[in-house]
Every structure is written in C-alpha cells, then in structure tokens.
Length: 605
Ligand code: FCB
Image (cartoon, rainbow, N blue to C red; front, side, top):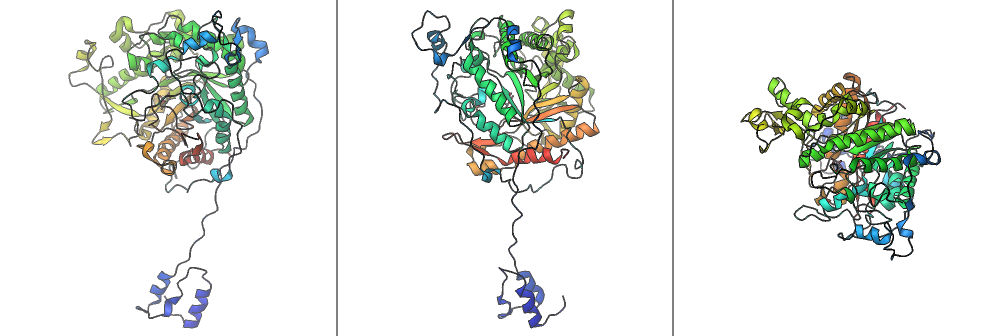
C-alpha cells in the first residue's frame, strides 16, 4: 500500500461513517498502515427485509360439474339431521336421534374443544410474513436454475381430518375405527395424546387457509371425515347437515383465497360401524364397499362442482403391510372404481381422480443394482407394496404372480370383467414417499421363506436394509424415515414407466419430522434447516425428472401444513408450522418459506 500523509489519512477516515476506530495515532505498536486499515470497521446495514406475498393469480372460477341442486337425486334418497339442533335429548324412540348418537360414543371419553364456533380469520400481521435469513446454501444451483415447474403443477401442503380437525365429538360427528384401534392416549408411546382437539382445524380452518394463502401457497389438500358426514356410517342413516355445511364452507374459503382444493374421501377414519377384526380400517367388512360408495355419492353430489382433484383413499395398502390382510384390498379397489365410475358416468364431472398409495416400509431399491437377484427381489418387494393394488387400477392387470404364488387363496384376485371395470379409474398416479431403502436376499434364501408362512419376512421374503457401503441411506428423522433425494429420479422414473398415466405423478405427501423437534423451543423449531433440506432436495429432483428424464408430474404436496396428531402422539413434528398447544396459535417455520421460494423461483413469471 502506498504511504499517505497524516492529513490525507484524516480525510479518508472522515468519510467512513460510524463505528470506525479513530484512535489510530495513539502509540501505534506497528506503524504499517495495513494494520490500521484492518482495524477499521464499519457496521454494514442489513439487506432490506423480504416479505412473503400471496400468489398473483387470476381469480377465475372453474366449474367441474353441475351444482348440487341438479345432482342431488343421483345420491339416492337421503335424510338429513343436525344433531346439535335436536331439542330434546330424550328421544330414544328415534333410531338416529340424540340418544342413539350418544350411545355411539358410549365407550369413549372425549375432551371438548375450548370453543365451538368458527373463528373469523384476522389478517396475518406483516411481521409474520418476513422471510427468514436467506439460505446459506443453494440446492440445484447451476443445475436447475433455468428449469420451471409446469404452469399447472399442483403444489402446496396437506392435512387430514383425523389428524388436524379435533372437535371429535362435536356437531354430530360419529366415532371412527381409529378411536378404537389407536385409542385416546396409547401408553408407552413418546408424546402420546388424543386427537380430541389437536390443532382444532374444524373451527380454525379459515385461519389455516388464510395463513397458507398469505405465503402464496397454491393448493390445500384435506380429507373429508366420513363419520362427520354420516355419524352412523351406513346407507340409510342420516346425513349430518352441519358437516355438509362445514365442508361446503371450507371449499368456498379455499376458492375465495384463489387456492385449489385437493380432496381425499378417506384418510384412516372409517366409521365405527365397519369395525372388523381383520383389517385395521374396516376394509374387510362385508358392507364396506356399499357403505363407502354411498358416502362418496353424498360428498360428490354436494361438492363436485367446485373440486378439480379428487383422491378416493389414503394409503389403503398399509392395511396389508400392518395386518397382513391382502384380500381386503379387493374391497378398496372395487370401492375406488365404483366411486370414479359414478363420477364419470353419472355426475359427468370434469375433475381428475386418483388414489394415494404408500411406500410404507420405504421405496425399495436394489442393494447392488448390478445384481440380477437384488433387482428381482426389489421388484418382488414392489409387487407386495404397491403392485397388488396398482396393477388392476392402472394397468387392468391381475395381481402380480409373485403375490398370488406366495399368498395363494389369501391373494386378491379379479375376474376379467372386474379388471376391465377397474382399469383406468385413476387419471394420475398418487403416491406418498417418506423414505427409501435397499433390498437384497435373505441369508437363508428366498424359497425357504416363501414356503414358510411363519417366517418373519413372509410374504415378501426380502432382506431390507437402510445401510449400504458403511453409510445409512440418508439423514435420519425423528420417525424412521431417512432422506432419499439421491434416489428420487430412479423412483420417479420407475413409477412413470411402470404405471404411466395421462395426468402424471403427484407426490401426494412427502415430508420430514425433524429429529427431537418436540424437545425444541418454538424458535429452535422454526429456524432449523433439516426440513428445508428434505423438501428442497426432492423438489429439485422433480425438476430434473421432468426435464431430463421425461417424467410427467401433476404435483407435489408437503406433509403437513402444521404439526398435528401423528396417529397416537404429538412427538413427530412433520408440520411446516408449529402450534401452541394452549392458545392453538400457529407459527410459520422457515421450511414453508423455503418451499414456497423454491417453487416460485422456478415458476414462469
Ligand atoms: C403418512 C400418512 C399421514 C401422516 C404421514 C406422516 O403415511 O398418510 O397421515 O401420518 O404419514
């Protein structure tokens, strides 16, 4: 550095603003000006605050079907009641009166919600819309900068009635099987608690929609509770008018905010009437199919006009995985097909249909992709995970032979006529993916297991591991799942190739429960990074899959829009918002901002 006179140095200092260390001439220990300049410091100002904004979208109302007034008769004769308004509780003569309704709940004690009227949303304070600090890393930088999600890509967040609504025994809702099989507060489960109040979305739905809309979220995926619509559950029992009005207003609220509703008819809340011993959601019950179709007809005649994306069942393939009841899937497939036929043939609606299949134990991948044995076993695993339901629905094909040969009479099977009826009853491929793992052979060989139905690995008879070459497949969440982004394109390409649909793939749920988030305070939970990493890495792979692998995508929905009741406990925090369990107040976590920014940053302006 060239030498400066003392005068010119003072001039220089005077222009540098506050915070500069002025006492530079006092007993210098080292006379070099380099040292002087390195001690000069100016506080920089911070970048301007960035605020999230609602998506600018034209509010055009899309009509998918005729209104209820014109469709009503298609659901057959139905009588309607509003239990809350029944004046006399002493109505034991009435088969479906208050006394009968109360007796449905006789064996449950349910906590009442703190309030029982719908909350009018308040505008989201701008302080809550301030974006978090920009990420210190870029996902996809250079790789996907110029890639855009298709204009019609459906993205947003999901919830499910049983997990978020609360108000369990309120406004005429009947009990569901889940209250029995999971119970109110299962002992021995960390964070155990009942779903009775949860996040009280039943009365806070307007606030929930407003909060998502304020951030620019496009779609809200929710489920309708069958035991709310039909508290007694079965055909001929009365329809609950308050539930009909509730979901009517929920759908209207979503549309008022220019968001899109994605509606699931069944998300693990089968009415108690269908309780049976062999399937955990009553699928095996002999009346299940007729009961579901009756319920679906009531819902569709009411709401088909305003909803463009419908899903019949959430993860019905968990039943076989959990209870080994493979035959019951036949009922689910037939109930799904009859519902879609009703919609297409009688309602003549223009919306699209799907079913959400789970990859319960994780999406299987060959441990050694060069080993034909590992590949064959991976395909066998997939046959048992999704093939036995996906084959008839997407391909009009029989249950995979591996399943039939192993399970014999326990395997679901379809007549040619049934296969024709079921074939093509999904417009898009719905799938929930939380994790992946590797498949290889059992030490004792596959055949020994296939021949022994009491073998612990029966009927898949595969060896599943999360570890390959000394590394777990990915970072571990609080639940069992691990990150799986490095295999995402393989998984998408497999599904696209094996079960092609005109509508493409929708990842109807993907998400992350941060390790030990339940032990964090609210600020820690809101600012942590791992959920951002889990979401963005998958979104980035979707872009590559679309443009580099030619995979057709319909959309991607993060689970969940808020932390919620995770089937017996509140310990796994999958939400992109936290909630205060006393005030029920929601707070955005950084992952929701990062998710929205990633999508909008890769969208046509
Ligand atoms: C899925 C369920 C959903 C939620 C997430 C974490 O399998 O469909 O309800 O529990 O897992």
